[in-house]
Image (cartoon, rainbow, N blue to C red; front, side):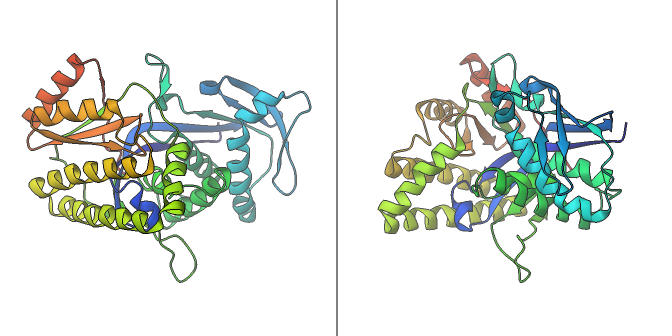
Length: 350
């Protein structure tokens, strides 16, 4: 064995959509991990059990390009396209560190982001975690210390660039931030004087915050949802700008309430943000607060809590908060009796 690396998933607490316009947002890393393992091999191989890829051969050019063997079929190439783009981008940096190119077998595993029971992805940012996992593994292969703050920041920026390239430039990078830096972060899109993405602000974890993560029962395409909201920006820019201003103002308040550990102010911000996401969905024609989110929200509110989707909305996951652990326990019982799944996740610390 040469190296093993892992990277956690993400859970957005507040700031969806507005983060794309530069607003501060709140995200935490969660203990669902993507794992990457590199071992010695007679030839270059890649395996990914969670997408049914086993021992696929490839070669590596001097420029770090991944070339699959001629017998690798189109479907397999498509499944590995994200790996190929991410690996090539990270390799370009790591080869400058005199990284050895002896053949190896790279195994990637994102099974923790998928529910076999429910037969669906869970919405914790598997592609971002995989990207960070690959970059960390290559850093380790190059002899770098991935637990060093400076190296973690470098991993974040390199992973962000690789992920954006793989996704055609889309995304805010908030999921990459959580996967690369762990813990709880205040994140916003912003560039420093060196034309680098700003490093997120690391916050103290509010250990006493009563929180519950709830799965809606189906996954949704973030790309599709964001594209729908982007259409509103093109067609009604003034309305879009006002909606973003309102979302940003509430996200600022939510971040401040979290830092101050003010439960009343934080719960108010979560409620207000959910309402603003509903307004954005209504104006854009996108089902951000879909019927299933409305249903879950009603149950949570009726039992003394507040709720909002975590991420783009429509499906995937939502997060409930309450003023006491007892209320969250009561909400969990009612939610599960109503047929929804509560996911057991914890904040993954650095």
